[in-house]
Image (cartoon, rainbow, N blue to C red):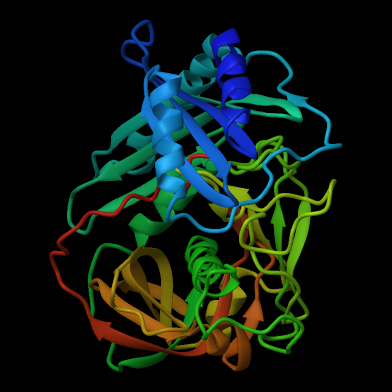
Length: 433
């Protein structure tokens, strides 16, 4: 942090019980013109003023005095505040600057591999490749010291708009040197996309691919595992899901999209059990909404750009089973294979999973045979991951900030979906930090 930031912290502490200063910076590099990166930065100020929490944000390099006035004004109607300084926790700094040129070259190498292998593998389709490199930097300054980190994120998406449309993507902090996984996913989807058929029933068994299970985990975390969840949320310690269900928040996985040295409040990331043997062990809670965090306890707060911390997860990791994806399909015989699932805000009832299946396949005699039109799929979480759960697969894969296996369920409800949804939702994996 600059001397101006240190001065702002000192002057703010004269009028406030405690202060947290946060610098956020993101720089996007386009492969076409990497010499002209696009940088956005801002300064956030959280205050504990009179026992109430206030927040202010300014893009660029705002005047500190104005930010302090805004934060104090915001605190007048703010919630009960905490002390932002974490006392005995040591300062945390990133280990040097990431190599931008090396990151760009790794992305170029991946695209060259895709350009070489896509035409002979999928000659009947044209794909559009989108790729970018994002550098993120977060610095938190409190009375306890400074925590600073910088990381690179890789975004790569392949899309084919031909009917029926296909897409595959990679969002990671450490890209593989081979495009094999992306190509395999695209080729598999293409093989089963040559015709489209409606399911014959609105209640069918279903298999979630690892992509689909990842979306199920995302919604479960926000709707049921967040400390802010409503009365439908489970009670800690109560038998809730199938005993085979185990879910971790693991912020230590090397190269994972959600891995950071510290969370949105400056606490160190770690591996935290959320669900064990179907029982809720711990909800996602930041320091202001959960029990007051003890020094050294793992952090469970995230930040959206220009916003105060909130409860959230780093990487959701779900335990695997013993079945392959093919075995899961074979066991249900007839049903649906659910792959790409997009949100439908306002359509889910409390405690219910509901998404639009943009990419789904009809399973007959244990084999995927063709695509289905987009359909809405819905079921209660405690049914999908509870009494209707049949088996878990072992082929876990990363999709954004989830590492999940495929799974099969005995029944899911289908509804006709709007053929032309009002909004186009992104597959990008969630929060900024």
